[in-house]
Image 1 (tube, protein in one colour):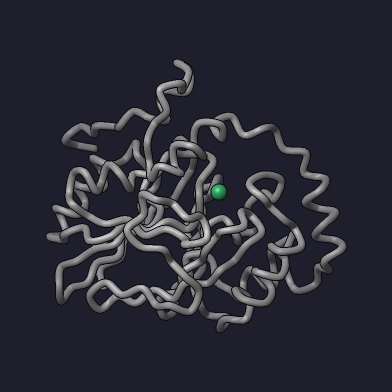
Image 2 (image 1 turned 90 degrees about the horizontal axis):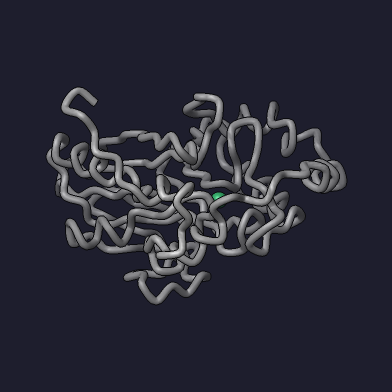
Amino acid sequence: MIFRQLFEPLSSTYTYLLGCEETGQAVLIDPVVTMVERDLAELQRLGLTLAWSVETHLHADHITAARELKLRTGSRIAAPAFDRLPCADLGIEEARPFDVGSIRLQPLHTPGHTDGHFAYRLDHRLFTGDALLIDGCGRTDFQNGDADALFRSVREKLFALPGETLVYPAHDYQGRHVSSVAQERSRNPRLGDDRTLEEFRAIMAALDLPYPKFIDYAVPGNRQCGVCPESVPEHLRQYCTQITQSPQG
Ligand SMILES: [Fe+2]
């Protein structure tokens, strides 16, 4: 399998490119609309055809590239069935494997950051979305977030996987790329093995994070699989503008 971890700097989002070497088909997990040109160039460079984009959840901090990629390449859109997006070609459900060529993603419903959130396991790799970040986790104060549900999702579903399973998060804000289930079990300051549910609740309640600056545009835009709302104000237009890279970039 061909595998690339791609980074979007504005929202510090990781997009994952998975390519089947036998069929030449590819999947992008959590592509970002600003990076469409980069992603298409990467697919072309690798000789892959984009078959699907797959979402871990309804993002609040960026606009998905799913719709733009579909318009540009004819790729299809897979998103959690839970969110009932009319624009999705396929609703992802727990325990129903998602196959693209020889790539098989095992969807794991992991509510808590959002109620419809999914993680995806691919053999020894685990794409954790915002349910589990390196030494952290996604916030639980919007989009039907629920600290108790996130605690259960991570401890009962993600930490139940073999310790050597590699953890690939949807974001990292400090330049880290990958972790493992064993490392997060032992070191995650919020969700590690020695934390109790009561402690986790208190940690999440005390975060006191600012209101997400793009959420009011991102969520409705992503409910349409990646439409930038007309109402996006000037100072946030960069979240909708595709980055065109220089030949060197
Ligand atoms: Fe998120």
